[in-house]
Image (cartoon, rainbow, N blue to C red):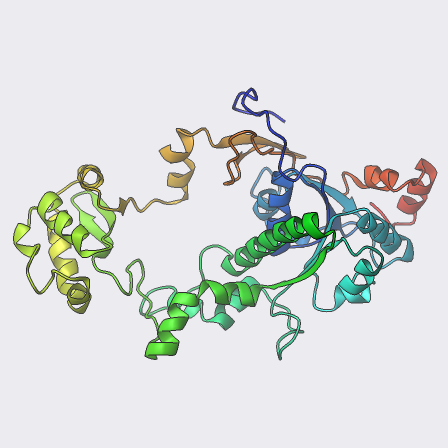
Amino acid sequence: MTSNRSEAAATGELPLEGLTVVSLEQAVAAPLATRHLADLGARVVKVERVGDGDFARDYDSAVRGLAAHFVWLNRGKESFAVDVKSPAGIDAVKALVAGADVFVQNLAPGAADRLGLGADVLRADHPELVVVNMSGYGTDGPMRDRKAYDLLVQSETGLCSITGTPETAVKTGIPTSDIAAGMYALTSIQAALLRRHRTGVGATIDVSMFDATAEWLGYPMYLQMYQDRQVPRMGLAHTSITPYDKYPTSDGEILIGVQNDRGWRTLVTEVLGLPDLANDPRYATNVERVRRRHEVDKLVGDATSRFTAADLDEKLAAAGIPAAQLRDLRGLIEHPQITSRDRWRDVDTEAGVVRGLLPPMNFRDVELPMRPVPALGQHTDAVLAGLGLTDAQITGLRDAGIVG
């Protein structure tokens, strides 16, 4: 793998070096959690179906013929292609798990138990194992057996009801429920490993997309419970703060977010040249500004229209007023906050080198690795050899279609 940065500063040990993770995973939630474990140094063996693999491999062909989701979520892993419905195949997976520290699965409800990969079975002989079961709706309740996809969970939890414009509810532009569950799985795994270091005992952990998303909705949920108030859909605006929205400039627009009354006074006196508004009782407090939201937005918008976006951005930054440009994805790719900090790295794939962003966990003594994205079954032989199988046995399994 190539790198854009000198390796001289990378002198520390990777945090999860020496740990082995086996994941029977697909789509987004579990692969996100295990990819971060791989980033942190763990060996991650991804168990995939022979022939097809993780169905996220076929979502699109956007990255040199590979699927964007798969490239994003699966670097640094070993791909073990095996038929888990065959006795020999499931025996190989069980043998692999027996030597692992963590087992993660996000199969359809009940599928892991039917395969003999339930937590109670696996931990009966290996109580030190950390098992993470990921699901859509959890282990009980009326929806526990329902299949769940990100859009469906966003809808069931009410996330869609507060996202979008006043006229239209929308899902978020990224798979928020998947990502939420993946991050809670990651946190839980690391916590369980830390506890195991003290006690020697592993854990069985259940993480659902529904619970993870509901946790992220805590603020609007409390408004509903204690004020009987559904948070309205506001587009880019904030339901509880004003001015907090996009505002026009002479050549575009800019986002401004004023968090408190002191910020309001600074905005109107030092930036917009409207000092009379600073202590006007109609606008001096956030409560009054929210009550007169449309008036405030018009006053601010009329004033911001006199500036170019670049000039206004500079003035806002100098005054300490939070502001941002409304960028598209090309703007992110070319963002100076990324390029000036040298965040891009090269990542190997079966289709050639692609770019990837460094993980957001920045250790000052070691750079987290950006290891290759695996081809389907790329590591099958090595995994089986590590379990003690001979070349002849591996060939026999392949000829029988049990591994690929």
